[in-house]
Length: 125
Image (cartoon, rainbow, N blue to C red; front, side, top):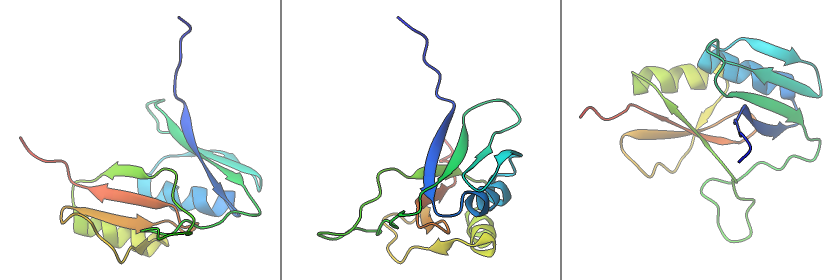
């Protein structure tokens, strides 16, 4: 069996550098590649990061999607230790809080390109 290693998730956007800087502010990861067509963020520990590629015809997904709406095809789950502070930082960085929130202990936000992401505090067991 060949070895597989997930190195990152790629998000389409009309502005790779802008979206990379949004997630850099949110996650604190350093920028790698940083050009108008392709930008990357990688955590210091070498685990999977995020990449951003220019897509001139990017269509923002609708959350929650109705019939005929462009649907999200993935979303990011981001663990935080203080939900209210994390939401405020995300909004200050350029996110919007989605109108529809399906769970009380999770906040769905939309990044500047419209990609949904969830902020949550892990349950203590």
